[in-house]
Every structure is written in structure tokens, then in C-alpha cells.
Image (cartoon, rainbow, N blue to C red; front, side):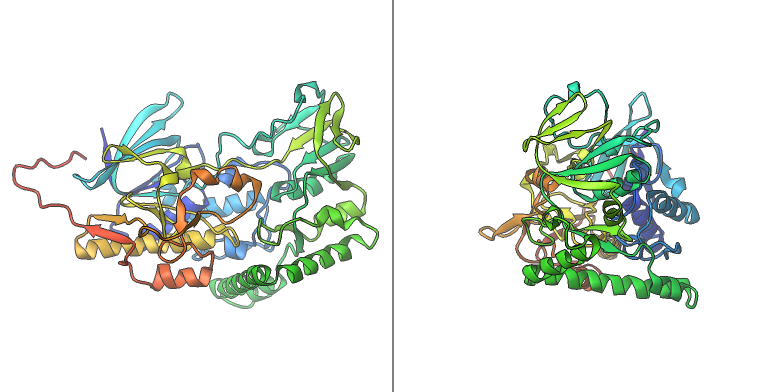
Length: 495
């Protein structure tokens, strides 16, 4: 039997639960279900279990705009974020709409019927479950949950210790008193190093090249002061907007005067580590925000370096040995455990195959519209968060836009919203404007974007508010259609 819903949401992580809340609140007449490939709510925050796992954004912007963050820590640990997402689902009855262990593999659009047919593998037997819907809302993020990036270091089989990837952290790993090498310098590495250093004999962060690292307070004193004196939502929104404006200011400064911002960051690090430390380990070759800036709460990474519980080595790996790694400089790092924090794999549309009227869609061949829809692909929105700010800021705006779009279509009798191609001859840009390795490895799989609205994603929250929450739904970038009237001889589509 094929079940029909007005909207199908794919994914029950941070984005999917937010999408369900917005849909249920703004479009209460719409029927919906959430298809979740795993067996639990939470997405990334349920999957990642490595030591110290936490957000690299403050929770006043990573949190939902409709649910205040009430914990003292602004830079929150993974379990607290997971509890926040699950609490949101439970409080609003969203969890009753989730179909767990439903991995969506294929979605096909029929223009004749103006609806999607969605196929998912259900349960351990991978039984095919079919659904139809009028609108498909993909909230599966862009990480490949099945596997992280394998850098394929030479001779790993020679190593007598244990090699661990953060995405699949083993519960039985005991690193107390052990020598640990963490390969990588991104957000995952700077999280794992100080946490493991608390009990390991020593932790070395081995990096090919440095990353910008900035310390921020784990707790937001202003937020905690306001929470005790104002209504929760009022205090939350004040801090949320303050943080949004600070993020925008810092990002814009980094783009306009990168040399000054770089000097400022390096000065902060020098103050943390002292005049004798080799600041080259924290001096990237690129400008701030060419890649994401890593945040560390309460200087925890710098504190472990000062206490000699952790160290940073900038070099390239020549080979694994029986007892560690030999570097191209000739230096040898002995280790009992090696953690390969070498990055994640990106996956477009959750890895599902999408077809329109029998034609398979290649995501790399389509044009993005408003950073969420794709040319020639009707009634489908995919959530992509910001690269220069918190993911949920864009997710909330996307959800609000989808609800406006659905209401607009209902009011005018439209059944189809189909984004148009960018006019011929106009320039195009990569969908994600970051030079990070994990982005560059996969950028050719992603759609392109235009150099102007509505085909451009500006990575600007204030500008997106005006476009997605205040701007017109109908513009030059999207075409609306009405389904032809059914004749008495037309058989209704089976539900």
C-alpha cells in the first residue's frame, strides 16, 4: 500500500525536527511524515560520540528561533544538543510523525500527477516502502553518515596500535595514560585534543597546515544574566540577535580587511601561548573565512598546550610504522592510538536518486535557486545551512519560506513550483564558497549558483530575512503551474 502525505520530510535531525515544527505550526492543515534512515532522532548529534563532541557555534544561533536555549553553556556539548532536539520533538508531538529505519533511496516526480513517489528501504530486511507526496522537504544535511574521509595513509597495516576515525568512535577505547596522535586541525581535531589530553599521557595534533583558532567563553555571561531577569524568549532573542550581528561583523571584516583580522587573531593566540611559542603552528596560508574559523571554549586547547599535555606538529606523514608515524621531516611520533580527524565526506540530497518525469537528475548539472531549490526540479526544497554562521539560522529561514510557498500555492490553486534556469550567458559560482578540503573534494557534485538573486546564496542572514521572509514568493526564478482539471473519466491517483 502506498501512503500519501502533503509533505514528506527526509531526516529527523536538527533540520528535520525544525522543519516539522514550522510546518505543523504555520500549515496545520498539511499532513506530513518524517522518514529517518537511522533508528533515532538527532542526526549528527546522535551519530557522533567522540570525546568532547560539541557545537562549533553558539547555541543562541544554533538553537531554533522558536525554542529558547536554557542551559548555562553557550558552546554546548553533543549530549546537551541531542537532548534539546529530542525535547523539541517530544514537546510538540513531532516524534509521533517519524518513521524510523526508513532510508530514502529514490524520489521520482510525475508532472502528470503533480506529485512525488518516494521509495525507502525499511528495517533490517530493507523492505521497499513507498509513499507519495505533493512536496518533498530534504533535511538530511550534507554529511555522509556511512563513512568519513579516508586519507589513505601509507602502511597503516604496520601500526600495532589502534586507528580510530571520530565518526565511528568505539565505546571500548581506553586512552588513559596512552600516547595519542590526532591527525587533523579542523573543528573535530581541536575538540578531541583537549578532551583526550585530560587523561592521556600526551596528545599530539599533527597537521599538514594550520587553521585559524579562536577562543570563546563556554558560557555567555550576558545570556545568563538576562535569563534570570527576562522572559525566556525575550532574553534568548536579544542574545541571538547580538550574536548574529557579531558574526556578520566579524565575517565582513575578514572579507574586507583580511590582513587586519589575521593579525588580530594571531595576537590573541600569542597572548594565549606566550612570546616563545612557534606561532607558525596557528598561522594559516589562507585568509580568515576562506575556511571556517575553529572555536575553542574557554581556551581549552591552548590550556593543554601550555600545560604540555598536548602539542602541535606541522608536517606531512611519510609512513605509519609499528609504533607510530614517521614524518617527511624525519621526525618520528610514537603513538598507542592514532585518531584520523581528517574530515568528512559530503553527500548531495542525502545520497538519494532523484528523477523528474523519468529523467534522472544530476545535481551538478542544475542551478540552485535561493540556496534551497534546483532548476527543473519541482516542489522540492533541500536545507543547506550557512558556512559562515550557525546552520540553524538558515534552516529556520528555509522552513519559513517553505510554509510561505505552500500557502501561496494553495491560495492561488498552484500545484507545482518549478525553479527556472539562470538566463543564458550569466556567470555561475560554486554552491559552497569555502576552500576547506572536505568541500573541495566534493564541490563538483553540488549544483552551481548564480552571481545575483534569486539564484545566489549570499551567506548573509539579514539579507536572507528580506528575501525569504519578506520578499515576494513569485519572481523571475520560479514558475508556477496548475494541474489540468480532471475529467469524469479520469481515475483518481491511489492513496
